[in-house]
Length: 222
Image (cartoon, rainbow, N blue to C red; front, side, top):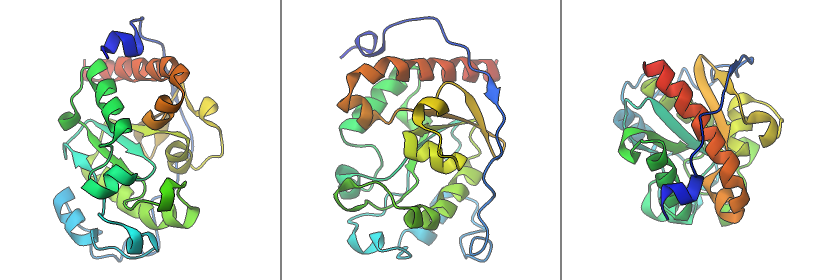
């Protein structure tokens, strides 16, 4: 499918930053963990890839840490690995990942230029939604990834990722169409590629989100 068929072409939409109280930096066990002082993604992965802090560690095939440019300007965050990701140990490699690659191409980015990961590093059984306790356990790992990468933009793929990072119960409609603040990082919430596969009618609003991001990103780089 050509990118024009997937998204079409229109003028960039406006998106103004919206200030919001960000969630606190992970506390408690976070400062005392041996990986807390790691300075690279490779070192962090080496420290945490054997994690068994929640039951998902017992059922995973692979720990799905993340992939991409360790100095990326843009970080895409989903909710959890699926079956393909669990099998290969890499996020977004199935049909949803193929669509994400097309989205990246449409906004003139390459997969190797960005960083892609999930809140959870292990697949929930039967691809069910992540549970609160699982996300609480895994979130410090994600926060450390963000600290190391220091992206200019975070793009949350789907309602669950957006709600968790922003610590809100607002629905996806309310979260879309604006640039949030997450601990000083610009954050945009859009549809998960898997949702676009289930409902192609959402591709147009997803493209509006990507145009908003691209406009803000280009202005920041100018």
